[in-house]
Image 1 (tube, one colour):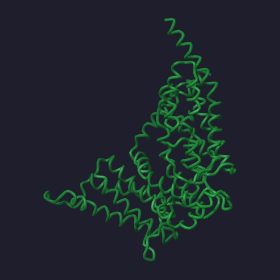
Image 2 (cartoon, helix red, strand yellow):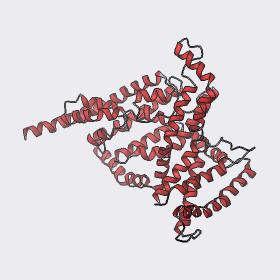
Image 3 (cartoon, helix red, strand yellow):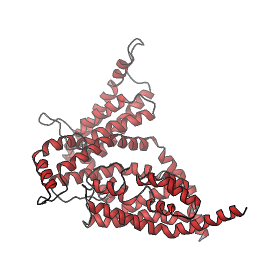
Image 4 (cartoon, helix red, strand yellow):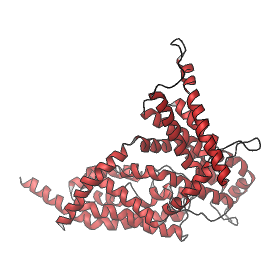
Length: 431
């Protein structure tokens, strides 16, 4: 058993850690991650208003508050959905500019102009003028993959031109802002001569513009990402990286954001149409069902620590309990430590996998509602789970059940580690 453990740890340290470390610092991955984070406030507010437009009550509810809410929602649904359409409904617009801005910053470029170039490039292919208006069909969740590709392309194009010193030369006396404006002329021209003809060619050959073609190509991948095996693989990879000392949630979560937002957009569209909610794997599912209290589903472990007879664990429990309630568990991960701690390797990996499996089947079978709203990941899990599902109390009950399951998984390993620390403390007192 010791040899097997040493081999596993050796593989993680020598093979997984170096690759993950490079991925974590890769500028394009970081730009995507930071771009999604930058656009998050728009999506949170938009999702919040969506719940007002579609109250979480049955139409025949006899509760007075429910009846008033339902009546107001029906009467003013158009007005309530306008802020939603201007936030979640065009989320890809914000994401495009945000990714480009962050990527340009990583190259030490003036970021505003690349962001504007990316925005123009995205609208050029995703919302071509139709009957005097800009169609919004691919400005929301269905345009996310296009937003990523276009923002990376246009920013890299501008960086290449800047690096090669290709541009319109202006006299030194010309103000800086005017110089920046003229620096955009050639990149805009190149975008119009590259992306736009490509869009026209694809449309002539397939009848689809670029966002539609990309979504068609990615459809099998999006469907696969919503399956239980894909969810378990993402959970496993995240926690193996965390165990190696690398912020696995930042790496894997950054890669999954595009799928999460695409699935969320489909769920919200289905909600508005009165259809069945199609997708399980959305960010709220990850934050409030899988990683309760933070990566490793450690909230229950913190409560165990608070009642521990070992002084070290009891101190860590008291320090960690408040942050853990808001899904911030670095104090317990680094203070215990859980990282590279052989005693906690199995429960740290297993608890989130078991949570994911139970929650997946509960949502899939309709026992609890699917996620329809963007909620800050720092919301306490019972509150965040209910909020994400349109204030469904069943989601909060599932959170409590999952926390008890995770606590039961951690308990025997906690007792083993507590015994080790008690022996060390006793030895220290003797010395």
